[in-house]
Image 1 (cartoon, rainbow over the protein chains, first blue to last red):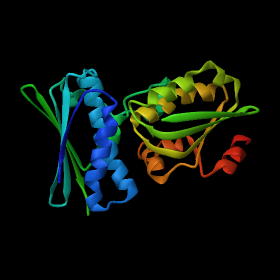
Image 2: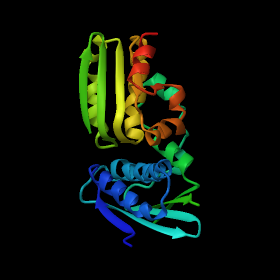
Image 3: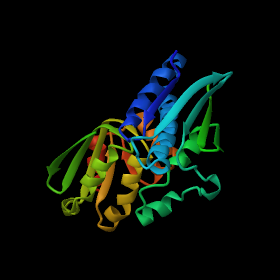
Image 4: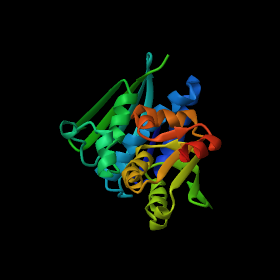
Amino acid sequence: MNNSIRVNCTKKNLKLIRDFVVEYLQTYALSDIMTNQIVLAVDEICANLIIHANHENPDKFIHLAIKKQKEMLVFEISDNGLAFQRSKYKEPNIEENIRMGKKGGVGIALVNRIMDKVEFETNDTQNVCVLYKKIK
Amino acid sequence: MKITQEIKDNTIVMTLDGELDASSSVILDEELSDPKIMEYTKILVDCENLNYISSAGLGVFISHLQRFEDAQIKLIFYNMQDKVRNVFEILGLDLLMTIVSDYEEARTVSNE
């Protein structure tokens, strides 16, 4: 089974990535809600990489590889853009966002709540985000 | 993402068809930013064919909610698919926004 995909950094490619994840997950016959949550978490990371880390530069690429390790699905998303600084990350206060009319800042919160483990690594110029999701 | 609007007296029925992601949610933001929308008192959002929403789509609704509340415009979602409702629930947005089961209930709640 093809388990990796590489796309250039335009927002239109998010749909391609989601379709790829849905197709990969078909084997596992997960519930609609579980499938959607996993697709969403991967989409959120990829959107951040495309928009914030690579400024939608179509000459840049992101790469997603999926594998299964025992009971875990592992999603490895890599790019060569600006690294995500986890130490600067703050969990959003949704009510505050509503009051302020704030548009962004809830994507990583979704990822953290959906996934069992989220890792960010940077080696030289490459950044790798690894998402782990336990499935039955 | 295809958005259609139907005007009924003081109500806009907005039908969302497709996926709201970082790419397509820009269209929704434009629709909700249209000053004409402030002339109505109710915005009923039909989510039956909304197959996906990411944080970008949620963010558009989050960013307009207070403005609508201040103008006493009711924003009500109905016919939402379970998997989409689940995304609202993960962030607790189901408690901060009005999500009802169908059009009839949306009409009823909007008249309260």
